[in-house]
Image (cartoon, rainbow, N blue to C red; front, side, top):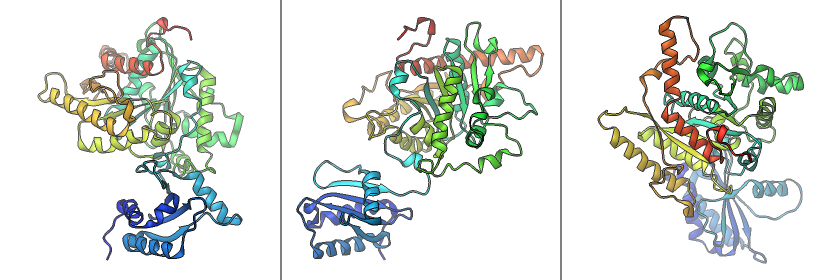
Length: 458
């Protein structure tokens, strides 16, 4: 029995070609791994080169011997200009991407992965954002920023809310969009419970395709304008919640196809784009902050990689956190795009000042962050100094706060003095130094100043 696993198949294919003279006759090799993990090949010979049958037969035997049950027993060549075969070859050439191990020598190596799900995480091609990075940098369009954590319970939503308040207090027009559709909660932070149905993201995705222009996003935004939260000169924050978690919520959620987000027949990506464009038209914003789904969920992958101009990612000093974050950072490197996606790293749940081991944890996290970013994010010529305080890898430290350990309500739940003190304390925490730093660094990514009064007109 052949001892081989899914993760070894690419290496075994390379071994087959290293042992064969056929590679000297080839312009390119494309490895196609299907939805079951089986391997097929598409070979493009050099011009005026003919692949002899006996060489192909030897290659087939080698592949069968090394791959065993993982070999799909197909080798395709670019011959035939009619019918379905030509269409198949056209699809291969259009969808394949350069292999990670390709070194620009002959032959060129490509990979084409066929997936059932997680396309937003596995897609390596450059995508079209709702509007360009250039328009954002020039201040003509709002920056869409995803807040993402690989694991839950690290303060992602709380940090997003704090960042929104800090930006708004300094004059920026901010909208919050709850994309955590399977575990929504943004609206409960700002608003008391109500029996009235509140529409949101899930309704836009479903109702908009049915009702068209009759469904207006503007009428479903929830404004936050309390001076206690925003200060006397702050801008209002507009919230687009996930929607009311009522008897119909699961029925709506079940009708949205998140498994095949990049499929040409899936209308969801276009609807996402339309939603952000309509949101900006309604309010003329500076920032749109997205609260995304935890882990390798398709919505989280779509948000941080295909919808955003920057991402704020959260980690803790644990092996589990770094294993997940490494893959996320590698995805955000966007190897086939001109530049990586701008990223800010948050070191979450840091022990408080004076707690034994705090300084060591800070050092360990920072050192690990530098190594992970150096290996998976930066181009070789762009690796910054390990002490660069403004670099993407250099973490923003948010320590554990006892005032935030319970459910956060940014409204007065009753009229007692204790309730007023509770709200005042939470506001002081959420507008404190760590969130100020995060907001400043976020603004600097897009050549903006935190204080809008000092903003130079572009």
